[in-house]
Image (cartoon, rainbow, N blue to C red; front, side):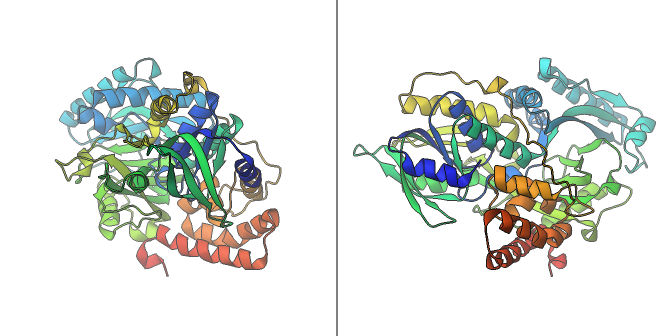
Length: 499
């Protein structure tokens, strides 16, 4: 993907695009893949980098949602379990099976969670990843050597999916590009165009990096901006009422020694009504998440101190070595756009299903949902968008469309002794994956910032130097990039470490 070539393609186009997608997260890029693979002319614009928002800050699970089963949301669980199977088949390079164990401290817990997870198995049908089973005390300790053993009665083992969220997203963006879509990061929509009849007929956007403005005509516009969807809806109708309620969740990353085995822990009930996961991920231990209502969306949300304390306290009830703030290698915060409800303030109970709204101006907004179901969400959105645009009826092909990973790059010199990334990863990110900033590389083309913030800060000057050579930038750009990244990275550390 060459950003300059894509910009030139957009500049030179004289006819309307079939579909313009606003938003470069999982749903938006999923829409671009779906629409382009049907043969439609598609443009996608993202105000920042692909996955800068919620889509890079998930719990890294491709799952049906055990908690949704407990809430009785059978249809969402069944849909998500099917999509889990589709993703495992279509992107096996980045999605894999992961064993989870629910530690049980009474016979009743073993029975209760054993029955619940057996139902979870049955709902997966032909997409099953293996049967759940009850573990003895000794089997549980063998698989989870750092679990608290006092009072432990055993556990329940089940299987779900795990992935690297932005690695998949970048590969999806490449797939959309290969299917014929034009995908642009750092392209911020400033307004919506309308026809004399008052229908949305396109967008105006700014190339954030160069300051160039574009007016784009489109037969249909999909608003897939996640937590920011209401802001785009207001561009179409200033009187529109919000359709999402916002909640944030944090994750903490620790050394692998806190969870040295291959099995993950699922803590089935926390103080805020969620489940908490403790998961092996890229040689680290990932723990999350929380559910905290927030008033407005921002691109770089901050973790609250009470959220950090909550996660530390909760996971500390299950691990022999209780993690402390000083043990945090990285922390990150994501915002959930939940389908709004006027009857509840408890975001943990709001729907994780998706909603499609088509307003009087024919702006299509898709919101809600979860990473696992992005493909089905995109299919629904493109079905509706093609109807708005009076496009020929073409079925979705994404259920069997492969999403391929990147090719290895020849330069294998490590960037850091404690990180699994090389100089070649940086070069590929710039040449083939549209990385424009040091943060793009260290947060989303690699996961260095999420794995160890201090290590990422250490290698930022080297990454900037490699990027400057590739992009033809000078030392002023290099120094500014390192400074910007260092400021951003402070948000990925507990406050007392951010000095």
